[in-house]
Image 1: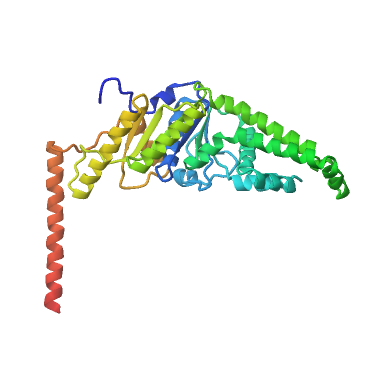
Image 2: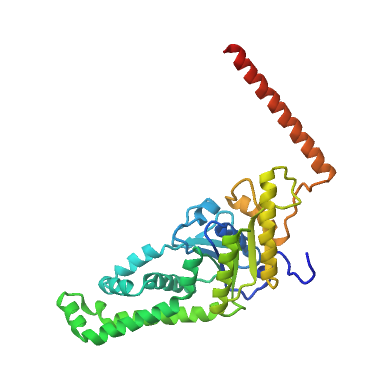
Length: 356
């Protein structure tokens, strides 16, 4: 690796004791959940208490840890200080509407896309703020959702403007109508306004924390392919626009050139991947870039996650390096077993022909 290139691990996140919020995001299907799960496991080794939250509607945290999680923080099996929860914006939104605000909220959500999501996120942040976790890891939805999450303060600002315009247009009619139907002050526009103001204040307070590099960082997860490189570039630019710190990139599903590979297809894949990996290093020379190997199996369950976590701390080294005595011995052994299998297959076919 060239001189001046930063360490290829997430150790800098573990060493930054002031961190309160860690976002893990990127394109769909690149391994964000596995990465956020492992980062939370590593943080649990150095922090008093860790909460990992999935804000992706297609929750995978339960699959990663092989344990059922809900919107209530649950202790992860095998840990005393690692908790996980899955937040579903739609469910949260439905619950919000059950508090006598349904007509008003539906008016709002139709008028401003994302307000229901913003309000449910505000409710979740309010809940999280009351809990005493030393660090919170967000397993975010694919890039588009993540960027909306960062726009929540301005989304709620629009919501408040909408409320004010409704209030100005209808004056006291809304209050009179709600009293007429026996809903009382629960449906009063001032109550609604106050509630939205409270959420906006909360999100603005949290947003200030998000913009503080001592408190918040964003980890971009990708794979060495063109679309993922493009999406990562878009994400990094948007994060810079929102003044959110990002100095870690995880490149997942890498096939290492040193690995003993005989397949022409895999060799072509290695060549293609290396082209994009080189581009990542060129574009993000001031980032910590962690490369993770492509595995023949999924990383599921606490033990598998713990075992795989070593590659987040120290760079992955293939067990068999091309050209070594061990690799050649392994290759001879593989060829012998393949030859035996081919002989058996030939015998089976010859017997089949004789019977016919």
